[in-house]
Length: 106
Image (cartoon, rainbow, N blue to C red; front, side):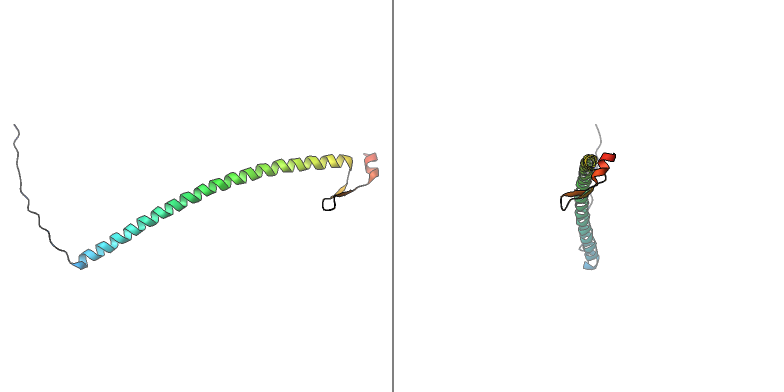
């Protein structure tokens, strides 16, 4: 059988002076505020990172659309060039100025 040994310890509670407790309370309060600030900054950074991902996706889609429409425009202009070689297109007026003899020469 094991032998047990019991020791008695007397605990004493002593009131501390405010000049000791107040600086600890103030510093603890500042640390708590900083923890809150870190939390808010972390959340804001996460929001911004998510927004940047969305922006990157939007830029990628816009680039794809731009390339697609640019190719489409080139095709339309190329077809127009076949019909009206060397023509000058005025989109505002909806006209094309060309030399009819240029088509015969081509």
